[in-house]
Length: 203
Image (cartoon, rainbow, N blue to C red; front, side, top):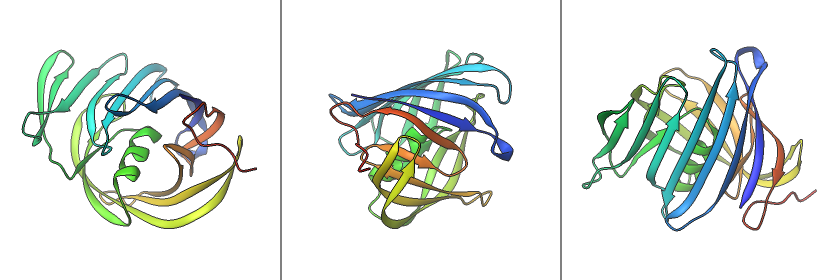
């Protein structure tokens, strides 16, 4: 199991919190669990829990932000995400080629592991804190493999350029194994214990 910590950045590049995580291959495929402490948009604590299958598709996920919480898993036919939001039943249109996104490097890692190269995708995006679901389009561009320096060392990683097509916001991220080791302007990896399954610095 890998353990780590990200510094979370807000608008203007100012630190607004931390995300402490652990992740590892599991019975279904892979699991990521984290605790977030943030001051934006107001001081709050979040718990994130994602489980994916062997093909890196969402098997179950839960997010609790203090004011709201959501629990989702694919429906029996795979065309919906079903579960509860704030203890009320919820059903969201979904599908085998649809992805899930939230403000955490975990969902970017999950999406990148599913993709084989540059593509545009349909995404169920959960709004930060409120967890309101919206349907958006995103582009992931695989720009190649390179060594990337981080505060915890240099990693051999795949570089992806992420673009939210609705807003035009774009940022580069670097994925080593199953961990985003650098995410331009949004998250900075400041501590990592790779354990038995995580990536190790090359320098």
